[in-house]
Length: 239
Image 1 (spheres, rainbow, N blue to C red):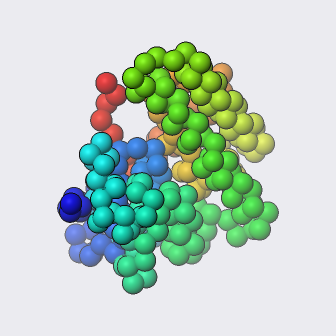
Image 2: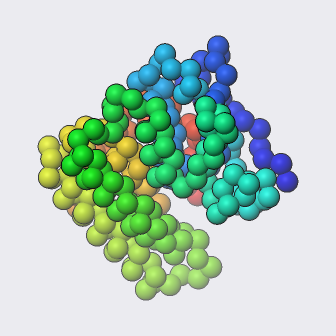
C-alpha cells in the first residue's frame, strides 16, 4: 500500500522545495505539528529549511499500519515527520516532533525557552498533556462518540477526568498572567495541548467552569498561524 501524495500548505512559498515532510491527519495530535510548523514559517520567513509539505493519512483505512508507514513510524500512529535537512531523519510521537523542530529550527527561542527553569516547566507541561489530556480525552471521545454501546460509567469516568485535567490547566494559567502556560508567552507548551482542548465539545466536556482556559482557547484560535495550521489538514465538521 502506497502512502498518499504530498500536498502544499497555505503558507508555502512556491520558490522553495519542501525539506520537511509531515504525515498527518485532521486530529489533535496531527494539528499540534502543523501549529508549530506554521508559526516557525512565519517567524523565520527567510529560512528555506522550514519549507514543508504534508501527506494526509485516512486512519479509518488503517493505512498507518501499512509497511510503507511503519518504516517511518514503527508504532503505526500519526503524526510522523521526515526531515530532509538531516538526511531523511524520521521523527515520531507528536511531542517528540515538536521538540525536534524547536531544537533544530527555533534558534531564537521564539516558541521555547533558554532559561533552564522555564525549560523544565515547559517539559513538565508537555509530559502532562502527552500522558494525561490526550489519552484521557481520547477515551472520552471513544465512549461518548464511538463505543458500540453506551456505557454511562465509561462516559462519566473519562469526561470527569478530562474536566479535572482542564482544571489543572486553569491553575497553570493562573500561575502566570493568565494568557499562556509557561513564561507568559505563546510556546510549544500551548501548541501541545490546545488542539485537544479545542475539541472539548466532541468529547462532551464543558469548558465554562474554566474561564482562563476558555479565553486561552480563543486567544490561540485568533492567531494567523492557527488559521493556516487548521487547514493542514482541514478537520471535517462533527457528525
